[in-house]
Length: 186
Image (cartoon, rainbow, N blue to C red; front, side, top):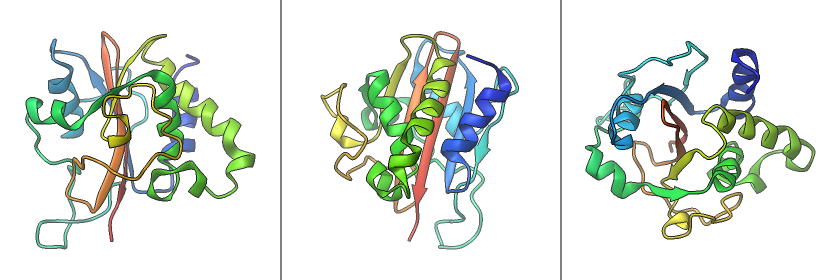
């Protein structure tokens, strides 16, 4: 991992310019789901002070207003049931795919020319969490398939927000947990 500058560049490459969320918090509980929930609800700060983004679209239960917390208040048990464990390579694929419409790489403009740069950014993000990070997603194509190809997977999700559709990756090491998400709102 090259440091804060490389991290900021990778976050910007993958999550800049869209309805996205990228944040990291400390691991303070043995249960990763509690730590993920704290990051999703903006109850933590990046332990290294590195870049985070919260570009979630505006919404409220009544259809207008701004939500500063894009995720619903999931309990750890509920959160664990909505996320499926994946291997780091599947997580890298999904980090790239989140940039495309309906969270598919095939929908990323000029993907063939950008693929190498996007995958380099995805691997930079994952490197922060060590050589074998634990990863989870809400993309149902990964249910029971930790090595699923998520670059252009079927478009079904266990949504964790109040938006029409959302998709993302939770990545954890022994000391940190990251939440990387994209949203779609009609």
